Length: 396
Ligand code: PLP
Image (tube, rainbow, N blue to C red; front, side, top):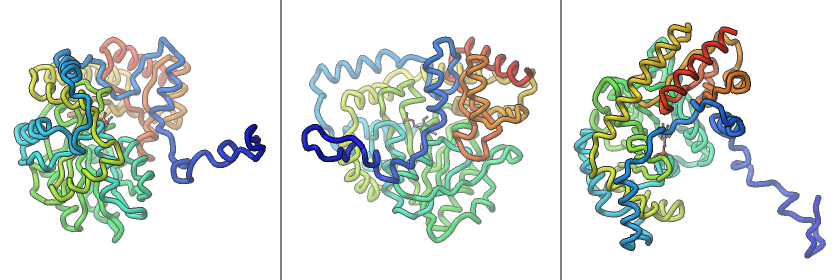
């Protein structure tokens, strides 16, 4: 134990626990574990992180500069600037296919902060939240932080990673409050059909659950139209979350939003005060410019991801590696089970031996331990070379 030089008493800050038990018990993201390991390898091919390799379009950055220059450097209301909420309501109507009023929108610091905000609003400690397995690891982390119990519903390859409604329904208990759906999904890239999505909403409705629909990849669909929970059902307990990060290559700007019933938005607005108070004001103007500017860029990025998907799948398939063909988002969910290694060991060994970073499947849930996630948001040459090296490593 150390002693404070000022008081001579034992230094509690150094000798006591680093944080409260719940926070201390938060498991680290295994994607970050690979990310950190890859940081010290300058030549590593980085296929582990899900962030567009494209630059933010210049008119978006210029709008932020202009906003700052024009004095938009102060707090905004908790829910975001009015013009952005209006533009978002129009976007949801035009592109997501359902009616939302500006008063139903809360602007957030990225999609992740909206998810945290909404889950903190809908869950009390001890409540249960149904999460897909595999799913984006941050869902489990958020559930842990709000003291809720995450209950996984498994997405199996033999059902093309669609949930089994009967199995899902059997997991519902009197403590279940929220059913989380993520389409297009991370890490699999499933989009699902309107009928499948409507069936999930119907389960939520039958049991009086909230349906939290993470639609952060809504505009990255390769083979079909955008699919939104709000468009397939008028159930009143749907909250949908979106992001500027993926659609406009704006990960670092941290702007997302939630669409919720107005009464829920009133609660979310109050909660936003201690969370972030409001989202960075110039970034909100940048988001507005993204919505109002040319949209061809969105199609160009989507076309690039589609082309990379097809090329990378060719390399993997030729090498005998089975991977799901995603209809959306920008990931390949590849089966590396023949390595007979746990996915984290496999990812670390692949990095050490071949300088390729991929996300271990176990980062996304227990069902993924024979898989890795390969990001298509990586330059084509690196992506294809990374896939070749992965195949070579499996064949070694
Ligand atoms: N939802 C899913 C499924 C994601 O994969 C991500 C980011 O990777 C997000 C939400 C949140 O992204 P952001 O906070 O950058 O908007």
